Length: 181
Picture 1 (cartoon, rainbow, N blue to C red):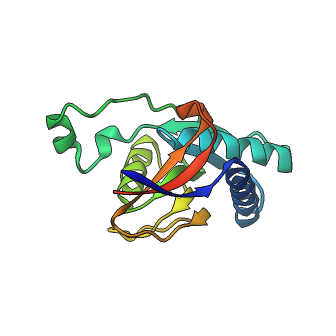
Picture 2 (tube, rainbow, N blue to C red; picture 1 turned 120 degrees about the vertical axis):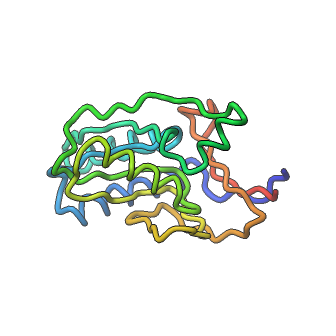
């Protein structure tokens, strides 16, 4: 895999997440009944950052959760055969029934991860609404899923891979890059 282009640096990621936080507050007319839920792995630190930005903008401390979708994946059988799946804990500290859930992930691609996340959320309660915030939307959907909030749209070819690096997970500076397969 060879590196092609750096798309977003730390400052650009920060600006994108600030804009997403503003859009979430604007669309929902504030933060009442919102719960931010990060999809593991990189969706969690992004969700925390959005929560912090909402706190700075509105002075609201929105509840935040972490969602593991491993058991909801449509390729779980294939992953089990290769001893790949590592089940992590789901932790959503509030009752989500009747709440507006903001699912947060790093990259939206086929839509399968989001579908699995929605299934996982519905098993935990009955939210009034589920919205999706992503850092990068790269296109190529296989399911009729779209993000409500997008940090950056990055059209890609099927031969490219978007790599998101976050300090909290990767122990290096934030960076979004495109690699050639």
